[in-house]
Image 1 (tube, rainbow, N blue to C red):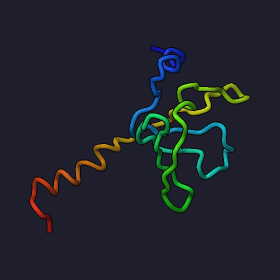
Image 2 (image 1 turned 120 degrees about the horizontal axis):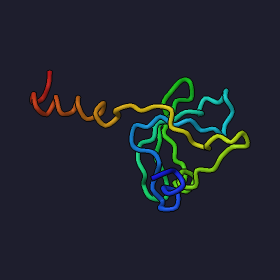
Image 3 (image 1 turned 45 degrees about the horizontal axis):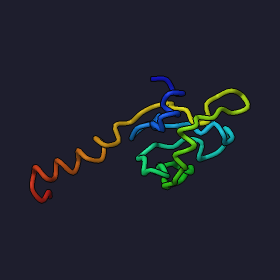
Image 4 (image 1 turned 180 degrees about the horizontal axis):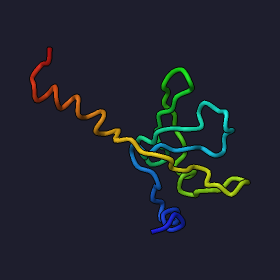
Length: 103
């Protein structure tokens, strides 16, 4: 299924942990990149870094479904990497659960 088919069926092209570049913002913008967390229906929750601290943000899911292109012909939102975010968050908690109360 290509991006056009996904857009027509309202299937999000991103999954939890995908690192996404927002090509609508300038190359010097501190919020050009974000990590996709979850699709909550109308909104997507993401985490981004403004150069000093992590912040959360929301984007309209429709923006991801449409997959518009910029004037340069690039996709508006482009996957550029992935991190195993669920494992990163879940594994330390599982270790504590397996080992009791911890230290």
